[in-house]
Image (cartoon, rainbow, N blue to C red; front, side):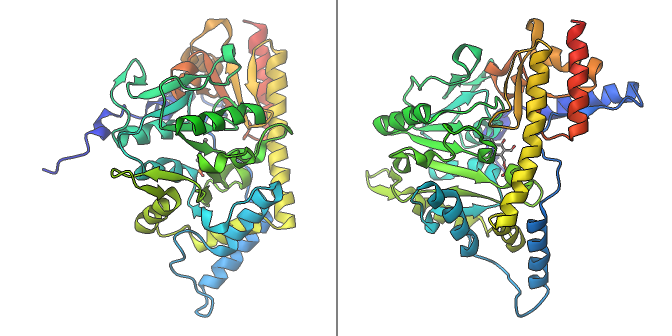
Length: 411
Ligand code: PLP
């Protein structure tokens, strides 16, 4: 029989969302007719904006005509999109990124998961805790994580984020080679100010570390002092790769499109001590293992940068952020502590009465019929917390807030 990659066996079963589904199903089957409000999984609910839909219709028409048909495209993405990305997302913010530093993909999950291909399995990794699980699991798969004890991997440095440090992690103590940062943060909804992010860039420079900066929620930033790109910080092009996604920006969770920026300044070193550009390595990786995001998705993404596209996606984000405000304020009025919801579509709730994440999950399900995500599912420091998303409808959000207030009044 074929010898397998044992690292996959080390991975615990993906327990979180299947366990949520199991508990919800059990509840629903015994409480028929009682409507459940689902605010657990981070998927959007609003339709794709008309500008992108129209662009997709046109792109389908292109594919249907021999004179405009598009087959395999460039692995790095079409120039029509890469140029729009650099112009709108970087040049307009005074950041000098060139189109050949942008790699269009089918989303940030693939890119944050695949990027590890270009680094040595010896590299030491640090993550903030709680964390988007993809960063950890993909390092387990590639043999960088060590062994699992009490919910932590032995070779991964966990940087706890809790109320005690206002969810801003301390700089690493164990000199990691790779640091994953996600801001605005999933799941805590927190951000770093310019000064705080600068401390990370400075740390990476002085310790020869690489920052993998996931800004999938960049479009939700509302405060002026929160950088939209890590490259707003001087010197970041020498130490950071940035990941972006159209999923939460424009409802592309089903369409699939995102991009990764690998500046030419970023260098690595091979076994002989020779310096290598990471841009060239990622290009090689993508050309070998990826055949490009679909033409239709890329045309849709391009349309988001038009004037009407920008306005339409802004309207949808505003809709979600009004939900976020209602949740944040309503939960606080109920006397329950929470964070997030200002620069991110997530509300991070401190479970009242010292309940564990799962105890609060069960309480919310049984008393409010509201489904959220137990914080412990994102890492050990998530214990005692609970995540709600702002991606529901306005009506359901308002109803959920009322139910939570009623619950709190009886606690
Ligand atoms: N990064 C973070 C932090 C996320 O929360 C998500 C999705 O939930 C992703 C990446 C995945 O984005 P995409 O849909 O582009 O794969």
